[in-house]
Image 1 (cartoon, rainbow, N blue to C red):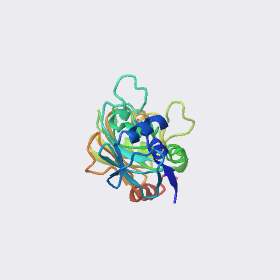
Image 2 (cartoon, rainbow, N blue to C red; image 1 turned 90 degrees about the horizontal axis):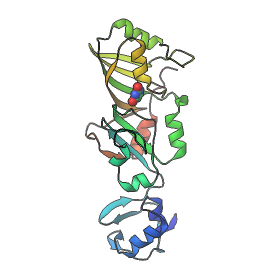
Image 3 (cartoon, rainbow, N blue to C red; image 1 turned 45 degrees about the horizontal axis):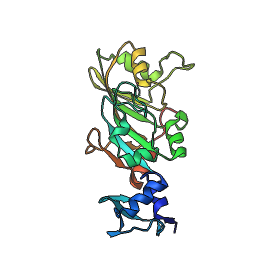
Length: 242
Ligand code: URA
């Protein structure tokens, strides 16, 4: 059992400062199991705590793990320069928990984006160390030759990279369409790899990270919590390109 005072519990879940949470509770908008709690110092077991704030249901989560179907035209930054921030697509409570992107997608890229406030998780899943496969579906401006596919798998030279960078897998989906799997997370990696075979990416969509695929029913712009099954799927991937 992990007992926590109501105001501290709400603060940990992104509902504002301790003072703001205290005011929320005193305003009578916080309820546990349908019963309004107005005492900010009431203690709760956070284990399987379900509560509501202003009628919206929440479950206590020690750490936040989330997937977002990133739409095009959004920047993976809290201080976006030219486009809206993906954080505008999340509820304020999640943003206030200081969730961060686990590896970024470019402004014009779409697809599976993971976010968390668990520093260790972010580190492991965004560093290239673990050779985690990231699967992209892309279209190109020019037809892709068989030689280009062979070169992508064999390894291409990228500016500022000491060693050739290779795709762990590359499958043709059409004359100008590929499914490409990479295990690093280098800056503009896929676009630069396609550039290295004298072509250009027109559209780029991330469909999976590790063993976790973007669910077909998660609409662009929508997000959801990762449950234990999702986290297990994430970890269940075949080591590729080792
Ligand atoms: N590689 C890119 O070039 N862009 C992305 O958004 C992701 C991978």
